Image (cartoon, rainbow, N blue to C red):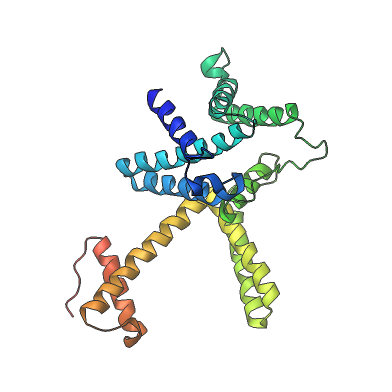
Length: 270
């Protein structure tokens, strides 16, 4: 608790209207949003890499965002950090009766239903539930689109709107790909955008049926592309040339080299 108190005191000093930091004093809830999102993604990246030291540091950066928001709220007489901690502690106890009470769930599915029902009840108690609201609920607009797609699909599936297995999803994937090709052949730009959106939505559904995180998969794909492309840049630099000095076939050969290196295979001689 000593370190937590120290962090809260530092933030209070940074926000002091006379002796505080000008930049920190300029911030409000809205201006902090980009930083909060960035820190959350950096935590995720460190966790996925398994870099424990980096994870510790990034969690601290994310905690700073919580403390920052809480301090602004405290200054406005809304709530403070202690209220934030108390609220989440109370919520965890309420949503885990199998740990903190005598409830017994027969399966993970039953436990998950209780969790979702608890969230719905909490919204009702706060008067946040529209009596004619969609079962899709409210999803934060700031979430990445792939993550949003999977959340929408999961909520619809809980109410019976889902394919029984993955085979029809693959069929739908091929159908959407054909429709995108047709739109491209017709040169219909608005339809191309629409069909590409449909294709991405189905890809998210494939990920959901495979029980994998589509957003995490795409991040991994981005990292793989970056890693391999940097190998291409390195090989080009070794020859004292530029990327544009090489043919696509030459660049593709360096790409294949990067793939072989990742798999621990020998690289053919030039």
